[in-house]
Image 1 (cartoon, rainbow, N blue to C red):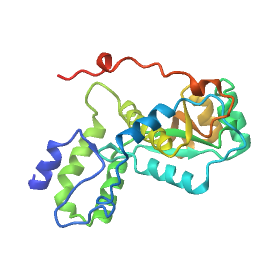
Image 2 (cartoon, one colour):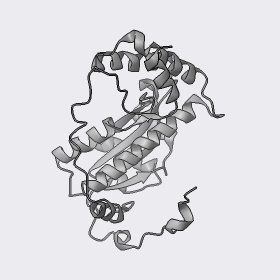
Image 3 (cartoon, one colour):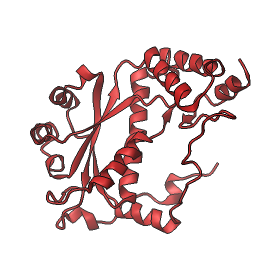
Image 4 (cartoon, one colour):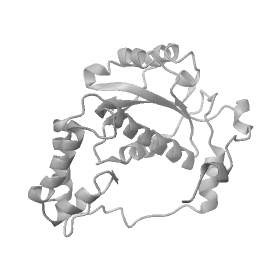
Amino acid sequence: MGRVGRRVAAAAFCIWDAFVIEGRAVNPNAAKSVPLSNDHLLAQLHWRYATKKFDAQKKIPAATWRTLEEALVLSPSSFGLQPWKFFVVENADFRKQLQAASWGQTQIVDASHLVVFAVKQDLGASDVDRLFDAMVKQRGADRAQLEGYRQMMLGFVANVPFGITTQEWSARQVYIAMGQFLASAAMLGVDTCPIEGLDPAAYDRILSLPQKGYRTLCASAAGYRASDDRHANLAKVRYSHGEIIEHI
């Protein structure tokens, strides 16, 4: 294994959203960071909550929604394999059916947008090769230099360690994307409600997801809170900093 191969092997279990190859294509946006202030970040995280009642008349502007979709596309995943698909449900009839499969939660139909987070079924060698081909194309990389990384990924998806299945590992990646979506929405002043109180099999049937190679994991409504949502002003119940963060 060459120098580049050894480098990637040493980082095998990191969250890979970048793979630097000297002299090759790099991310043109990497030098355009415009950090939020500490106060702004915390203010938005304090502002957000799991919205229980959305204003059905308020819609997310198209430009804002495009930004949130791009935030989903930019979500990190282990190895960069992206074992997911995000289904934006616009069909009103589908949303009414999904509401019935979600304990009748009104967020499903009242929110401006609804995203179903789906995990890829049967992640395998073809998915590794798809990513490998994309890396070579988009970064102008040398296939031979990356072959060690490809072999490592192939071995991983064929026999996931840690005592979990490939499907369980893939599901963990989807939750990373959901976290990115919720935080990104908060930064833009968009309300969300992550939803696991749903029947995944019913969602799969209504949206025909298995035929597309995916299955439902969770969902999120997005839009703007109703003025009479009493949950909006409730104090956040969080354990103290000292109880949940330990420096060792």
